[in-house]
Length: 359
Ligand code: SF4
Ligand code: SF4
Image (tube, rainbow, N blue to C red):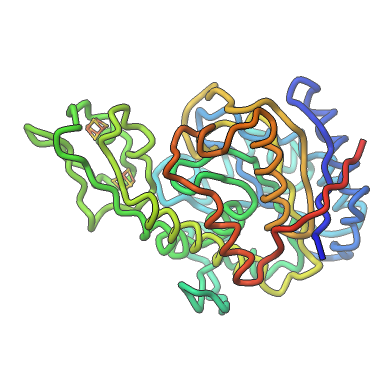
């Protein structure tokens, strides 16, 4: 049976209040209220954007969803986990201050921001799963412990997984530091001889201090690299490469397996929203302002099936201008199908869906 994916058209130009109201309408149309019960500790998983990034989904757009949860007398909290790379989302203190500055807070949305993986990104629970790569994944402890989850993903492209949406939000975004390391360990970037101009851009951006420059080119120390792919994204000379077919496929499968761990035990108690607005070719972890969009705004999609909501979103994005997502992000060696197909294979959800348009 096909999963139901609810969709409402929206655009950033309508304003945050209108987007919030539409998200709330979608929540009601989907009957998602039944997933949340009084006194649930409900994780509202978001991405508050990096320091300079300004294309993330803004806090006021989520007010309607928070209000829906409060109507059901749950105890919702805005949450995310610490990043592997340095920056203002690297530990719970800096992350909470950034979230508060951006309105993801009691004063902004009426509920607190609480990092689900503790102060240092190490508060985790080992969740057993029936995966292909892993039989156990490391998930942020409070994601595992809370009774229900409302996942809010910003649909973007991604330089290593092609698509960044609900599966990535759950898999990478709900993993502890150890879980993130495990996923990223699939990526082993290399600098191609003869292509590197020694511009130093990768050296300046590498969050792990894994890159050095000699008289000829940049070098990556494999033992220090955390596989974040930032060097791949910032190199303008296509001098950093990895085995796109093999390594991206493994990364995407690992993301799907961690996503399975993040929602383990929450069947019927989890709802997944994809905001198809301000869709940039790189994700919100990129600390850049005014990143251009790769496709026009489409709206908001939501489902209780995390795979179907991503498949529906990708289909809508690709149908918008008749271009594949690989084409839109400018990398034809990346293929989003690995994460969707693997997620179906391990029983996380279905790729077949029925789209129900809401007005
Ligand atoms: S960004 Fe690219 S060209 Fe510049 S130093 Fe790094 S690998 Fe070389
Ligand atoms: S992937 Fe590149 S930027 Fe990231 S840690 Fe490794 S060398 Fe540094």
